[in-house]
Length: 318
Ligand SMILES: N[C@@H](CCC(=O)N[C@@H](CS)C(=O)NCC(=O)O)C(=O)O
Image 1 (cartoon, helix red, strand yellow):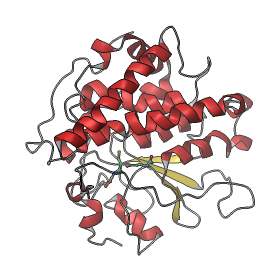
Image 2 (image 1 turned 90 degrees about the horizontal axis):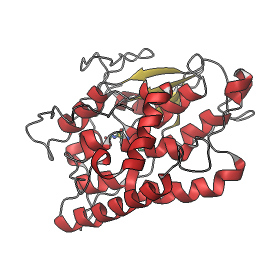
Image 3 (image 1 turned 30 degrees about the vertical axis):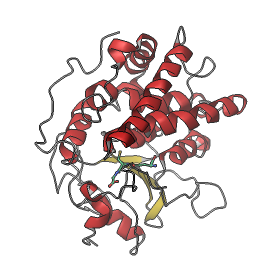
């Protein structure tokens, strides 16, 4: 099942635009889980492969826990050191809190992609939502996986968990509007900043990133949640980037106009509340995986692979 595909798996061979900017490719597996479809809601049929380091994958981990899906959908965590073959499992690269692949004992995430589609030509990204019945990938796009988790398994859940709705009908327009610019300038903005190959491409991503943080700071003043007064997917999608900001993006991705803790009191307070008061956020945040992954896995940006010790602490107390 293992195949050499370093063009696709080696992050140091990422393709860039002519102007030195980084362009993220669309995810390829975009199926839904629904009654009457190829992928029906069922207990213990689906499996989630994630990295604790990856902000996109962590969205799915947070929602899995928030909705109480732990007994319905298993999880496997890859090792944070992503090398020429992409994400390794623990048997290929041991690391604390990393797992072996319980389904196929694969060495790398790419082996799952080739099992699902032998001619697969895209990148081998996490998260991967896997169907054990058809032995294929249901979906590898986090924004869709969290919406699947939000509703698809409600019939198996106790009433309090089924009632949790992170994309409520009456807030959808607002959530979609915020998601759009937060995705482009913040979630993906940090990557565009950090992966830029020219000064111009770097600054073209950096300034909009900080303009958006300024805007978010105003939106969060005196508020616990981004939209309305409930936790929505907009908070989850933003949190996974903000929690990585001071420990990684400030240094590694050169997003250093301001730090969150030093420059954005309202964002910092919102982040600390989610982290310290909601186990779904704290228990799915692993700073060791986060820091090791970025500083180790991008030798173009950090050739010594030294992982900085600070900031201490990773997140301020409440
Ligand atoms: N649009 C995808 C992005 C997923 C993604 O880019 N994941 C990164 C880790 S943070 C990855 O696995 N990259 C591996 C690679 O590109 O080789 C999603 O939101 O699920």
